[in-house]
Length: 244
Image (cartoon, rainbow, N blue to C red; front, side, top):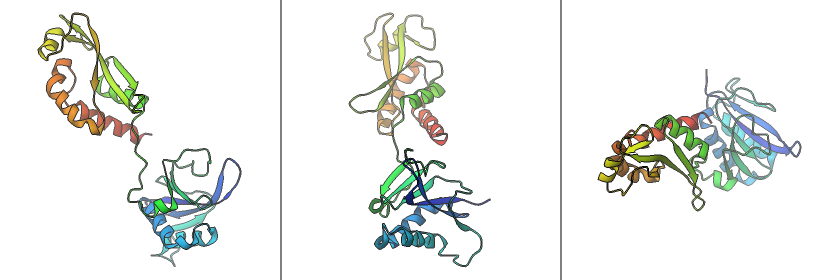
C-alpha cells in the first residue's frame, strides 16, 4: 500500500559512468514528488550549487508536514520502494531530470525529460516530454487496428514525422484486404485503372484530426477500414506508451 516515490539528489560523480547522491523517499506522496522537489528548489534558490544546504532544504520540503514523524519518509544512498519515475535533482550541473527507475544514476541513460533549475521552478507539467511515434510504434499501432492490410511506413525527411499509408490495388473483382473495388474508387473522383496500386494516407496525429474526419466520411467504406480508425489508433498509441 502507499504511493511511493523518490527524489535522487546528485552531489557527486562516482565515475565517468555514474552519479552518486542521496535518495529522498516518500511513502505517501509519490505522485507529488516532482512538485515537492520544485517547491524545495524554489525555496532554496540562494543555495543552488551548495549541495549540503540545498539537499537539506529539498528534504525539509518533503517532510515539512511531518517533521517529527517516524514513518512515511526516509533518506538512503540506495533506492528502496518506488512506484513512479525518479526525479533526479543534479546539483552539479543544476538540472532536474525525470528518469526511468534504475537509470537515474547512469550518466549515459537518456532521461524522459530534462529541465534546468530555472526552468523547473517555473514548470507546470512534470510528465515525460511528448514526442511523435517512431516507425516501429506506428507499425505496431496500425497492425493492431488495421489487421492484415499491407502498410507503408515512411519518415518525412523535412518534418521528421512518420507517415502511414495502406497499399491498395484497384480491381474489378477485389479480394480483401488489399484490393479495392475500382467502381467505388472512381465514384469518389479518383482516376484509376484496373491493377493500379497506390498508397492511401492514414492520418493519426492530433493535428490531423480534421483531415482524418473528412477521410472517414468519404473513403472509409470504400477502402473497407473502420470509420473510427483515428480514435482507434490513438488508443493503440496510448497502450504502447503505457508499456514503454
